[in-house]
Image (cartoon, rainbow, N blue to C red; front, side, top):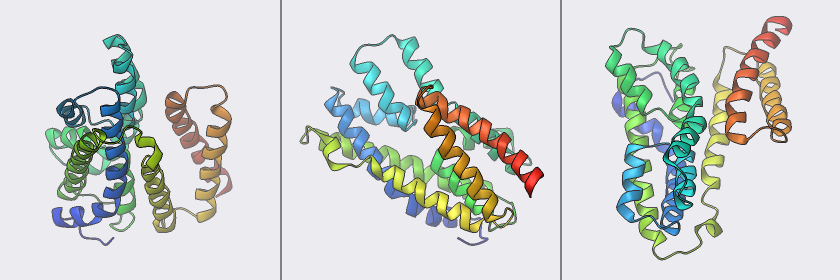
Length: 235
Protein backbone atom coordinates (compact mmCIF):
# COMPACT_ATOMS: atom_id res chain seq x y z
CA UNK A 1 0.00 0.00 0.00
CA UNK A 2 0.98 3.64 -0.51
CA UNK A 3 -0.57 7.11 -0.24
CA UNK A 4 -2.17 7.02 -3.71
CA UNK A 5 -5.99 7.16 -3.59
CA UNK A 6 -6.93 6.73 -7.25
CA UNK A 7 -9.45 4.31 -8.74
CA UNK A 8 -6.68 2.26 -10.35
CA UNK A 9 -4.77 2.00 -7.09
CA UNK A 10 -7.95 0.82 -5.38
CA UNK A 11 -8.26 -2.01 -7.88
CA UNK A 12 -4.62 -2.94 -7.41
CA UNK A 13 -4.84 -3.03 -3.61
CA UNK A 14 -8.07 -5.04 -3.61
CA UNK A 15 -6.50 -7.84 -5.63
CA UNK A 16 -5.00 -9.77 -2.65
CA UNK A 17 -8.42 -9.99 -0.98
CA UNK A 18 -10.12 -11.38 -4.07
CA UNK A 19 -8.96 -14.91 -3.33
CA UNK A 20 -11.12 -14.84 -0.21
CA UNK A 21 -14.18 -13.81 -2.23
CA UNK A 22 -13.44 -16.53 -4.78
CA UNK A 23 -13.12 -19.27 -2.18
CA UNK A 24 -16.24 -18.48 -0.18
CA UNK A 25 -18.21 -17.43 -3.29
CA UNK A 26 -17.55 -20.72 -5.05
CA UNK A 27 -18.50 -22.56 -1.86
CA UNK A 28 -21.78 -20.63 -1.70
CA UNK A 29 -22.58 -21.39 -5.34
CA UNK A 30 -21.99 -25.10 -4.77
CA UNK A 31 -24.10 -25.17 -1.60
CA UNK A 32 -26.86 -23.25 -3.36
CA UNK A 33 -26.98 -25.87 -6.10
CA UNK A 34 -26.92 -28.67 -3.52
CA UNK A 35 -29.92 -26.99 -1.86
CA UNK A 36 -31.93 -27.10 -5.07
CA UNK A 37 -31.54 -23.53 -6.37
CA UNK A 38 -30.94 -23.06 -10.08
CA UNK A 39 -27.85 -21.36 -11.47
CA UNK A 40 -29.40 -18.01 -12.31
CA UNK A 41 -31.27 -17.73 -9.01
CA UNK A 42 -27.97 -18.15 -7.17
CA UNK A 43 -26.34 -15.48 -9.35
CA UNK A 44 -29.28 -13.10 -8.89
CA UNK A 45 -29.22 -13.67 -5.13
CA UNK A 46 -25.56 -12.62 -5.00
CA UNK A 47 -26.15 -9.55 -7.17
CA UNK A 48 -29.20 -8.25 -5.29
CA UNK A 49 -28.61 -9.39 -1.70
CA UNK A 50 -24.78 -9.36 -1.68
CA UNK A 51 -24.58 -10.42 1.94
CA UNK A 52 -21.87 -13.06 2.19
CA UNK A 53 -22.54 -15.24 5.22
CA UNK A 54 -26.18 -14.14 5.32
CA UNK A 55 -26.69 -15.74 1.89
CA UNK A 56 -25.73 -19.12 3.32
CA UNK A 57 -28.42 -18.64 5.97
CA UNK A 58 -30.93 -17.56 3.31
CA UNK A 59 -30.31 -20.70 1.28
CA UNK A 60 -30.71 -22.89 4.37
CA UNK A 61 -33.97 -21.21 5.37
CA UNK A 62 -35.31 -21.31 1.82
CA UNK A 63 -34.49 -25.02 1.61
CA UNK A 64 -36.75 -25.76 4.60
CA UNK A 65 -39.42 -23.31 3.33
CA UNK A 66 -39.17 -20.88 6.24
CA UNK A 67 -41.56 -17.87 6.31
CA UNK A 68 -40.32 -14.86 4.36
CA UNK A 69 -40.38 -12.70 7.50
CA UNK A 70 -38.05 -15.13 9.28
CA UNK A 71 -35.61 -14.97 6.37
CA UNK A 72 -35.66 -11.16 6.32
CA UNK A 73 -35.09 -10.89 10.08
CA UNK A 74 -32.29 -13.46 9.99
CA UNK A 75 -30.46 -11.62 7.20
CA UNK A 76 -30.90 -8.29 8.98
CA UNK A 77 -29.53 -9.70 12.23
CA UNK A 78 -26.50 -11.25 10.56
CA UNK A 79 -25.69 -8.08 8.62
CA UNK A 80 -26.54 -5.58 11.38
CA UNK A 81 -22.79 -5.12 11.96
CA UNK A 82 -22.73 -3.19 8.68
CA UNK A 83 -24.52 -0.34 10.46
CA UNK A 84 -21.47 0.14 12.69
CA UNK A 85 -19.03 -0.23 9.80
CA UNK A 86 -20.94 2.27 7.65
CA UNK A 87 -21.02 4.80 10.49
CA UNK A 88 -17.27 4.42 10.94
CA UNK A 89 -16.61 4.78 7.22
CA UNK A 90 -18.95 7.76 6.74
CA UNK A 91 -16.69 10.15 8.66
CA UNK A 92 -14.10 9.91 5.87
CA UNK A 93 -16.64 11.15 3.30
CA UNK A 94 -18.35 14.06 5.07
CA UNK A 95 -17.61 16.36 2.17
CA UNK A 96 -19.01 14.00 -0.46
CA UNK A 97 -22.58 14.07 -1.75
CA UNK A 98 -25.20 11.97 0.01
CA UNK A 99 -25.68 9.60 -2.93
CA UNK A 100 -21.97 8.77 -2.89
CA UNK A 101 -22.12 7.88 0.79
CA UNK A 102 -25.20 5.71 0.19
CA UNK A 103 -23.47 4.01 -2.76
CA UNK A 104 -20.36 3.21 -0.73
CA UNK A 105 -22.44 1.94 2.18
CA UNK A 106 -24.54 -0.26 -0.11
CA UNK A 107 -21.51 -2.18 -1.40
CA UNK A 108 -19.51 -2.13 1.83
CA UNK A 109 -18.26 -5.52 3.05
CA UNK A 110 -16.18 -6.74 5.97
CA UNK A 111 -13.21 -7.05 3.64
CA UNK A 112 -13.52 -3.62 2.01
CA UNK A 113 -14.01 -2.04 5.45
CA UNK A 114 -10.85 -3.72 6.77
CA UNK A 115 -8.96 -2.70 3.65
CA UNK A 116 -10.10 0.91 4.09
CA UNK A 117 -9.03 1.01 7.72
CA UNK A 118 -5.64 -0.34 6.65
CA UNK A 119 -5.35 2.21 3.86
CA UNK A 120 -5.96 5.24 6.06
CA UNK A 121 -2.86 4.28 8.07
CA UNK A 122 -0.82 5.17 4.97
CA UNK A 123 -2.74 8.32 4.01
CA UNK A 124 -2.82 10.21 7.32
CA UNK A 125 -6.43 9.29 7.97
CA UNK A 126 -7.75 10.19 4.49
CA UNK A 127 -9.85 8.07 2.11
CA UNK A 128 -11.18 9.05 -1.32
CA UNK A 129 -14.39 8.13 -3.11
CA UNK A 130 -12.62 6.85 -6.29
CA UNK A 131 -10.35 4.54 -4.26
CA UNK A 132 -13.11 3.13 -2.05
CA UNK A 133 -15.51 2.83 -4.99
CA UNK A 134 -12.91 0.76 -6.86
CA UNK A 135 -12.49 -1.52 -3.83
CA UNK A 136 -16.25 -2.04 -3.53
CA UNK A 137 -16.89 -2.61 -7.24
CA UNK A 138 -14.03 -5.07 -7.66
CA UNK A 139 -15.20 -6.97 -4.57
CA UNK A 140 -18.81 -7.00 -5.76
CA UNK A 141 -17.92 -8.27 -9.23
CA UNK A 142 -15.61 -10.93 -7.79
CA UNK A 143 -18.30 -12.22 -5.43
CA UNK A 144 -20.94 -12.41 -8.14
CA UNK A 145 -18.54 -14.11 -10.57
CA UNK A 146 -17.37 -16.60 -7.91
CA UNK A 147 -20.90 -17.63 -6.95
CA UNK A 148 -21.76 -18.16 -10.62
CA UNK A 149 -18.70 -20.39 -11.07
CA UNK A 150 -19.60 -22.24 -7.89
CA UNK A 151 -23.14 -22.81 -9.13
CA UNK A 152 -21.79 -24.26 -12.37
CA UNK A 153 -19.36 -26.52 -10.51
CA UNK A 154 -22.10 -27.49 -8.06
CA UNK A 155 -23.85 -29.33 -10.85
CA UNK A 156 -20.95 -31.82 -10.86
CA UNK A 157 -19.79 -31.82 -7.21
CA UNK A 158 -22.37 -33.16 -4.74
CA UNK A 159 -20.39 -32.40 -1.54
CA UNK A 160 -18.63 -28.99 -1.78
CA UNK A 161 -17.59 -28.87 1.89
CA UNK A 162 -15.00 -31.60 1.29
CA UNK A 163 -12.70 -29.04 -0.37
CA UNK A 164 -12.65 -26.68 2.65
CA UNK A 165 -13.18 -23.59 0.49
CA UNK A 166 -14.98 -21.82 3.34
CA UNK A 167 -11.62 -21.50 5.14
CA UNK A 168 -10.42 -19.04 2.48
CA UNK A 169 -12.32 -16.15 4.02
CA UNK A 170 -10.95 -16.97 7.50
CA UNK A 171 -7.39 -16.97 6.16
CA UNK A 172 -8.04 -13.64 4.44
CA UNK A 173 -9.28 -12.00 7.65
CA UNK A 174 -6.25 -13.28 9.56
CA UNK A 175 -4.08 -11.57 6.95
CA UNK A 176 -6.07 -8.33 7.11
CA UNK A 177 -5.88 -8.28 10.91
CA UNK A 178 -2.12 -8.78 10.78
CA UNK A 179 -1.71 -5.91 8.31
CA UNK A 180 -3.92 -3.65 10.44
CA UNK A 181 -1.84 -4.33 13.55
CA UNK A 182 1.58 -3.81 11.98
CA UNK A 183 0.57 -0.72 9.99
CA UNK A 184 -1.47 1.23 12.54
CA UNK A 185 1.03 3.75 13.89
CA UNK A 186 -1.54 5.68 15.95
CA UNK A 187 -1.89 3.01 18.66
CA UNK A 188 0.68 1.05 20.65
CA UNK A 189 1.10 -2.60 19.72
CA UNK A 190 0.42 -3.69 23.31
CA UNK A 191 -2.94 -1.87 23.29
CA UNK A 192 -3.97 -3.55 20.04
CA UNK A 193 -2.99 -6.99 21.32
CA UNK A 194 -4.95 -6.45 24.55
CA UNK A 195 -8.10 -5.53 22.61
CA UNK A 196 -7.65 -8.50 20.25
CA UNK A 197 -7.28 -10.76 23.28
CA UNK A 198 -10.46 -9.32 24.80
CA UNK A 199 -12.35 -9.97 21.57
CA UNK A 200 -11.20 -13.60 21.46
CA UNK A 201 -12.01 -14.14 25.14
CA UNK A 202 -15.48 -12.57 25.06
CA UNK A 203 -16.39 -14.34 21.83
CA UNK A 204 -15.22 -17.70 23.16
CA UNK A 205 -17.20 -17.31 26.39
CA UNK A 206 -20.17 -15.70 24.65
CA UNK A 207 -20.66 -18.65 22.32
CA UNK A 208 -21.82 -20.65 25.33
CA UNK A 209 -24.79 -18.36 25.94
CA UNK A 210 -25.50 -16.24 22.84
CA UNK A 211 -26.17 -17.11 19.15
CA UNK A 212 -23.08 -16.45 17.03
CA UNK A 213 -24.75 -13.95 14.68
CA UNK A 214 -25.91 -11.73 17.56
CA UNK A 215 -22.65 -12.23 19.43
CA UNK A 216 -20.60 -10.60 16.65
CA UNK A 217 -22.48 -7.33 17.06
CA UNK A 218 -22.50 -7.51 20.86
CA UNK A 219 -18.77 -8.24 21.20
CA UNK A 220 -17.98 -5.44 18.73
CA UNK A 221 -19.86 -2.88 20.84
CA UNK A 222 -18.50 -4.13 24.18
CA UNK A 223 -14.88 -4.29 23.01
CA UNK A 224 -15.07 -0.81 21.48
CA UNK A 225 -16.05 0.47 24.91
CA UNK A 226 -13.45 -1.63 26.73
CA UNK A 227 -10.77 -0.55 24.25
CA UNK A 228 -11.48 3.12 24.97
CA UNK A 229 -11.34 2.50 28.72
CA UNK A 230 -8.04 0.58 28.50
CA UNK A 231 -6.51 3.24 26.25
CA UNK A 232 -7.41 6.20 28.48
CA UNK A 233 -6.66 4.48 31.80
CA UNK A 234 -3.44 2.61 30.98
CA UNK A 235 -2.03 4.33 27.88
